[in-house]
Image (cartoon, rainbow, N blue to C red; front, side):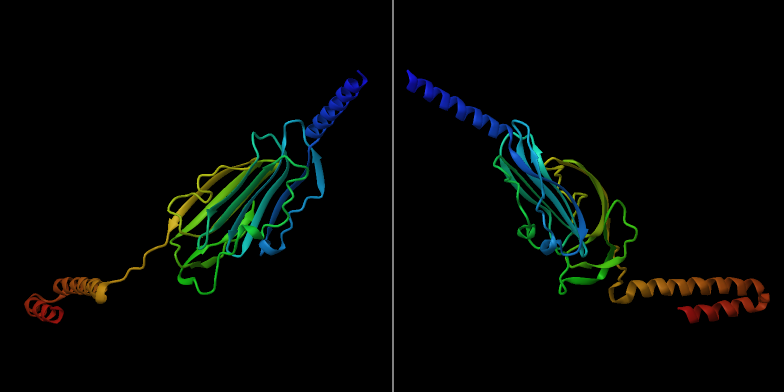
Length: 265
């Protein structure tokens, strides 16, 4: 009888301990808003704060990374979240030679499992390479938290044909940030995020516009431009003829008109 009591007590003790551990899942907690250059090699995503989750919650780490020109913005969130299942998601929304946008999210249920430190594994986030820059087209280029104070016209990469100008409003996961983006792109539609509206607990709303590069006016063998030029000269001369005919004495009109016609044609 005593053996059964000891066994039952041990079972209840282990059950209570497991319930306590399930209720007291600890996760890293941080909010990251970072703008700079070469973040792939310099950005450290380690969180110093630890959060104790409510029963049924999971740990999460989610980040959205955007590059325009030589600047990159990283918007990240770590902490507890209520989710149905564990999952890991990585999406490359827009890739070089266009504007770059990638996102990553991880839902897990182990102690401090949201512990990713770097973003270098997400690939090369740089937009430009020296051999691929075109000198024919330029777009206003900037990346800023809030609004761009200035947007210099920078050369576009070969393969792009439009100028993108837009804003992303990011809310949720303790995030409330607006990012303005301008730059060269090959997108045909206004979809920097590729129709994705959530990254982990962060909600994303995109508003933007696209403008195609102006096509240069090139005449075949110069004939079209020569035709326009010839027409302009003849029209000017015709006005001069009309004026001369009106102001010349009547006995010179026929001779003068004949002479001008021979010169023009």
